[in-house]
Length: 482
Image 1: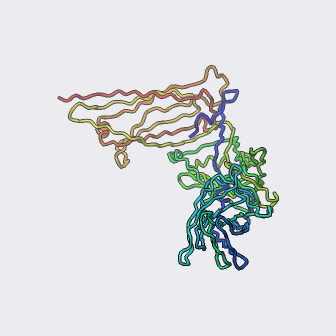
Image 2 (image 1 turned 120 degrees about the vertical axis):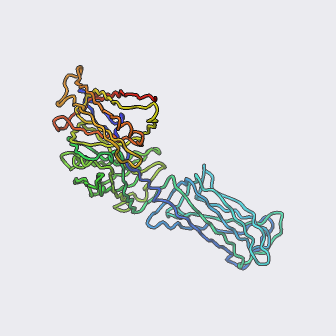
Image 3 (image 1 turned 60 degrees about the horizontal axis):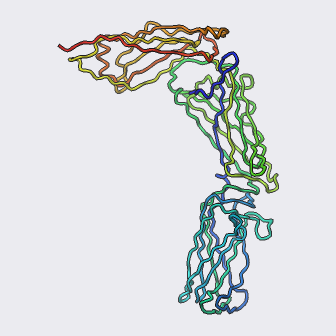
C-alpha cells in the first residue's frame, strides 16, 4: 500500500511518509467545445439579371454565421480534430466552379480555401455535390468581419463559369445554396470569455488491501496532509471541497471536518509567458490540530470519496475576454504529506487467502505428519501472532493451525543507538497431525491471519533499520507404500 518512493529518511534514521499523489484531473476542454453546427446560406442577384461569359464570375459578399455557445464568447481557437462538409447546389444550366473560402481560418499562415466543380442543373433540378475537409490544426478567428465580435466565422462563396464552357444568363430567381455541417470539433487552444461553468464531480478511491483488516484499532499522531490545487488555465475560478469521506469495510464513515471544507477557495488564473503556463495555486491543509484527520485515517477506510465543485469565472468576465487555455492545461488536485511514519496498533487482525492444492495418494507414498517451522527476526516495535486455516473449495475451514509462541516486538521507545539496532528472534511451530495432513487433500486455499500489537499499545516510530525476516522450514514424516 505504501511503496519505497513514498518513504523519506530523517537524520536520526526515523522514517517519514512523503506522499505526492495526483488524485484528480479536470480538463476544461471537455466543457468548452464547439457544438455540432449546421448552417444553410443562400444568395441570389439583387437585380434582375446578369450575363456571365465563359470564365466569368458572379459577384458575392462575405457572410458570417454564429456558433451558439450560450454565455461563452470565443474570439480565437485552434482545432485539435474535427470534420466539416459543404453541400453545394448549382441552379445554372452550365457546370459551375465553386470556390469556398473561410477568411478567418488559417493553417501555417495559409487561408483555408477549397474549389469544387458542380454539375449543371437538369430539368429544373439543381446540380449538387459535397465537399469534405478536415479542420485539424486550423486556427479559427471568430471575431467576424469587423474584428470585434465573437463566436462568428466568416465565409465567402465565389461562383464562376468554366472558361471552356458556355456563357449563361443569371437571373434573380437563380438561388445558389450551400449547407455547411461542422461536427466533432475538439479544441487544443481557446481564447475569449469562457462563461460561468461549474465542473462538479464525485470521485471514489478504493484501497482494496484494507478490506483484509477484520478488526482492531490503529492510532496515529502529528498528521499533516495537504491537498494542492493547480489551475493550469488562464481563467479565474473557485474550488469547493464539498466532501472528503472515509468509509470502512463495515460501512462506518468519517467525514473530514475542517474550516476549509465546503467553503469556496479562490483559484488565481495561470499566467502565460511565451506559450508557457505557470499555474495558479491553492491548498487545503489538514493537521491533527485543525481537523479530525486522525479519526479520518484511523477509520481504516477501504474507500475514500472526494466531492468537489470548480466554478469558472464566478465573478463574470473580469479578463475582458482574455481567458485562455492551452493544450494540456487542466485543474489538478494532488495529495501531499511529510509526516513521521509512526503508528500504534491494537489487536489489528489482518486476513488474506492464497490458493493451495496438495494431491497425494494416501495408500501409496505420502506425507504422514510433521511441522511447519517459521523462524523470525524482527526489528519492528510490533508484536504479533500468526494463524493458518486450511480451507476447502467453498472456503470453509477444514482445520486450523496455530503456533505456541508469537513474534515479539524489538523495542518500545525511541532508538538512540543505531549501530546496535535492537531485534528479537522467535520460532513459531505449526504442528500437523496425521488427520491434518489427510485434510490437506481437500484443501483449495490457505487462510493467513496476522494479529498485530504495538509495544505498550502506544504510537511507535519506525526506522530505516526496521525489518522483519522470515524463514520457513518443514519437518515431515513420510510413509512408504508396502
